[in-house]
Structure formats: structure tokens, C-alpha cells
Image (cartoon, rainbow, N blue to C red):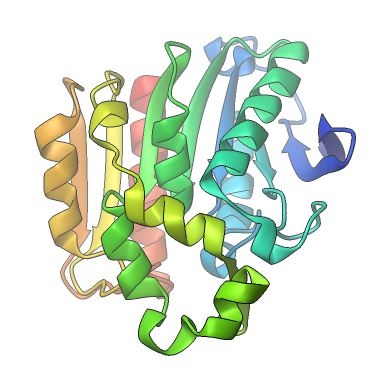
Length: 256
């Protein structure tokens, strides 16, 4: 069963989400655990090249409950694209968790891609049983340089407007300042649960070297890293996606 829902983060901040549960309850531990998917920016609840849309179907077929949502300023949620910020997205994340707890979910499994993986790490808590991080942004300052053409985009007009444009997207100056100042070192030290990280060796937006930050700071006893030697950012090739879905299925079965 799938339903499109509104999650009220505040009076003027409504988030669009899709909640899906299996047709039949298995009465297992999976029933009180919600797979929560956190998209990157720019992005929306379908994920890069629809990876969350596909994962939703895969996980529900396996008997899991899922929720994917649009951050404020993204997809069908309220706000404009340039309104997206890490601080605001963290507030969105908390309200999504509140909604889920109100529906009876006691535990969570986070799946984050790109900057959405960053937000998953920043919002980790004791009720998170596992995390799946797809091409995670662990060095946000480096990401801002790689993802956005700052030398061309940062003009006097952009600073005055409060946002700049890159590849057809509007990026707020607030977000840029956050990316340049943010560090995940302390948040990563709160990661104790099992973690699966998937990364492309040829990713020029989120370089493989970012993973060293995870290795040095995460306290998880189980960290599985799968790197694809011919994989670029978001790895949308069919053979890559098939292997990614297989690894996620196996990891979920072992940890939920």
C-alpha cells in the first residue's frame, strides 16, 4: 500500500512524502522499523536517477516499510529551491521522525545519497539500527567546490540576490556558507550502528578520498564499503544499480 502524505514541519512548511508498507504484515521486527530515504541537493524524493523510487519497490517486496520525502524547497514540498539549507533540512528531518514515531515506528534505517547521506549522519540517534550511505558527502567544503561552479556562479548579483544558479538549479548563499563551514567529524563519532557505504571510484563530485573521513571517525563495529572501479557519481548504469540493490538487500536482511 502506498500513500502520498503531507508532513507539517511548521505552519508554512509542508513536506511531501510517500509512505509505503507491504500488502501483508509479517509480524516481524521489520514492522516497527521504517526505512527513511534522504535525497541529495539538488534533488527530490525519487533520488538520483530514480534510485529511491526503485529501492522503495525492492524493500517493500522484501517486507519492509519505507518513507521518502522532499526537503523544503525541493520536489513537491513548500518553498523555493534556493531556500534549501542544511539547518532547515535538519529541522525537516526531525519532523519526519516525529511523524513516523506518531505512526508507531520505534526504529529506523537511514538511506542517504550524496548530501542526503550527510543529513542522515547529522540526524543519527540511538533508534537507528543501520545506515546505508550512497556516495556520501563527508567533506562538505570540497563538495561545494566540486558540485557548483563557484568561479563562474559567484557574482556580485548572486550575492545580492542571496542565491546563484548552477546547471539550471538555484543554490542559496546560506547553504554555500554552511557547506564551507560544516564538519562531520563530531557527528561521525556518534555512528555506532552497522553502516554500508557505496561509492564510485571515478566519482569526481564526491571523491573516493572522502571515505577516509568515515574510516577515521565512525565508531561502528561493522562498516562495509563497496567501491565500483568504473563507477561515476550516482552510478546509474544498469549493472551498477543491480549490484547496489543486491548489496542493500543483503545488508538489510542481516541487520533488521
